Length: 308
Image (cartoon, rainbow, N blue to C red; front, side, top):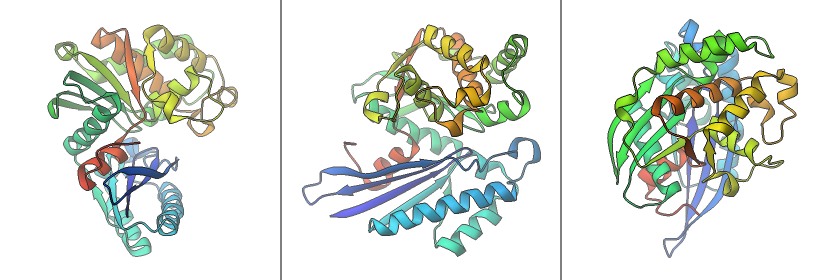
């Protein structure tokens, strides 16, 4: 039996996924864990990774590397996304990780990140051939792409993310109605014209914003990927949650069932982006995928066929 690990190092979160391939080629999950050290904090305005953010992320990587060793993993792939792509001092962070943990982090292009996210989303909603649109709201950017069968037809990367919007506009809570209206308009402008991309069979949302929204929809006291994956969120539910987060302080948001306390400050921005996407694409609902980049890496690099 062989064990594999994938690490997704994003602007907001770091995710570790460990799976085992048995002799009969069946796979099963050993560990799926997340932490939110916010490596991309302030990158949008300063262009660099903050020392404190790098330290938080190094600490998380240290904990995850311990788990990798404890679980006797044979092969590891680690990938970085928007924060590491754009920060001027990302090389400093990469070299520190390499020296401290003997771990090489691959910086994914926007195109490769989209392809891997598409692979995982395709697995999560079924393998039937359909024209699929997928969006991924990250901390530093939002990805949107169209695919059919196993191929991406078109992709777009938009420079608007949950951390960025929060840092720029939502510095106090609760948020006034007129400010939210203003921010929704700004998000609309940043996302640009998506009208020509509206011919698809199914819309799928991936990433921490939409999985959190699904957990809030189900009022989960303990996160359950089996419940979250495949949840359909319609426009009315998205707008209900938008008002829920707008009207509460961060301390009050932390009490909402299903909402991870560490995401309480940025969930309003993420939900706002989702609401604008639905309107611009002229659709009434989307399907939530609990699968993400870490699964796409496992599928692509190690040949994982079924995520069980």
